[in-house]
Length: 166
Image 1 (cartoon, rainbow, N blue to C red):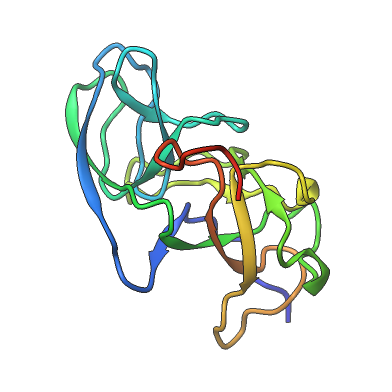
Image 2 (cartoon, rainbow, N blue to C red):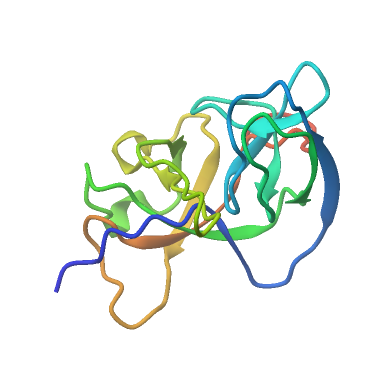
């Protein structure tokens, strides 16, 4: 049976090591959804990370509507593990464990559920510096190698790390 295509952003797994509060900017026209990867904007505000961001501060644990100043709770520990769905362009195989990949923004977050639409771009998983290190397939009944597989990742380009990459 095929894995369902239900993106949900980056979902913290295991012990939660650290959360911090950040401000979002009312001038930012992009909403922040639960499970969005966030970066520190040059203005000092948290914003949804771009695909190749190297200034990641963590993953949002709260929602902020577009163009709204608010407080955002963020999982900030660079060693936090996350469950994320691989995108549907490329099948997840065991061979990509230990590879590195970036978030992909092909699905919009939901303003009704407040959940992110971010996924892991499996098509670019390799050994180069990218946002997340892929650790393994998420152990769950019904989750299998292939497209839309759920995987466990850890940050690889986190602002709190001394240098980008592991």
